[in-house]
Image (cartoon, rainbow over all chains, first blue to last red; front, side):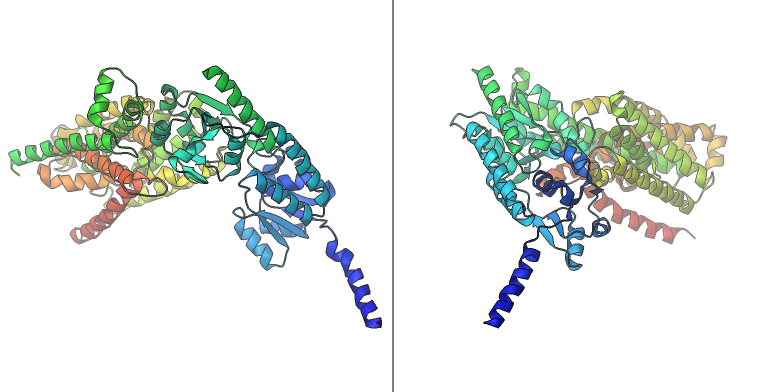
Length: 278
Length: 332
């Protein structure tokens, strides 16, 4: 009996430590930054990436302005002595490997491929940083807004396609693709055989001829060969794509409740274009 | 060398250009009838096919011919001037000089001042590189000194290109570092073609008048001077012409290597080792080589589009090695 009490007492002693929320959280990925800035208490965030302070890529950039930034280097992260490191699957791989070897607690997040995955990631993030309640609250508010605006493409839905610098495009199995679907557009990239991520050359773009293209620049007014693809004179001469739909990049580059705003922008654009086509 | 056989070879090369040009027009991700599309064009109907043909494939094929011809011609002129089998726009640094200046104009917003700035920036870079190589190696330079000076200029230019692209504001710039050194014709539009054409044509005209002087120069500088050739003027004329043509070409499609080196070599025996005739033959040969390479990159199946410069380097670099080994045997 005594021994059982002792064990119970020991477990009780351990409990608060085991459940204690991390107090010095470091993030080395723009998208884990966004979840963190949304859910965590500001004083528990040790550092976020430098990209988080840039309005064109970070939706919560104002909150990030008060937080020290990192460039994804292991040396920088170690200096903060974090009790939790958040990272993406594909970015800063050497850093995350190294930190894992050094015994830091590293949690990896994949890029969400649907609104459903955004919900799951918000819950997971809430659990990791001890803010599950806030996460549920955010999801509830997001779903309430979604219920009002989300729809499905009609049989004769207009066709849309993302055409990013370098000819990159996305299919249904992606966050942007899912939002296009929920905004009632038919994603024409699927007619080019793109399911997740793919490159479509100009010839193919002219052949599959979507009605509208999404313009969602990462850095407006900069120059690169990749960005030149979008300015090729042939796109001015062709009758399809006819329209351009503008969506702020920071609304859907990462997961979060702001994707509903991207959805609303796409839905409004669809309704305007449909009215114009009639 | 039989004169008739030489003429036959030149006709063969011209025929090859015409044939490859049509192959290039019909090669792409989607196949359609060229004849039917031309008929649509004739009837002034616009369709997807006419757009693909006129706006995408036609500029691409024309630029391949023009850039290929420029590289071949300039290679032949430089080899004739320096009387050095290893001289070419790529090895003597003019391509990388042009690439550096173009990168600065393109990636740092100067492009928006005027699109005409681009070919002239390429020209200035090419000219600066040639003059530097020439100044470093001196008047009576050996093969080795010229090559070494070229290596040095190439290295400096490559480092500066990497630095410039690293500092460039575009998020895509870093990924494009490699592309500049490998050249690409896939994004060329008719606008690019019009921009590069004037300087290129001036360069061609300046070079085409150098044939007789180069013939005389092949007998040695003193003999040429005694025949009334002003060597210093000839040198500047060729440097300037090469800079004009190569600068515009590199600014448009990036630095495509080895055409200027390989083509004059392959064709020299066919024109009876005569520099004047080699100029024209090399222009034809360069166009053939670049058209072939650009058709090949479209036919080779790959996930991401291949760079045309990869193919010319895969052919050209082993040839360069072969030339070095050969020149070691000939030289004392």
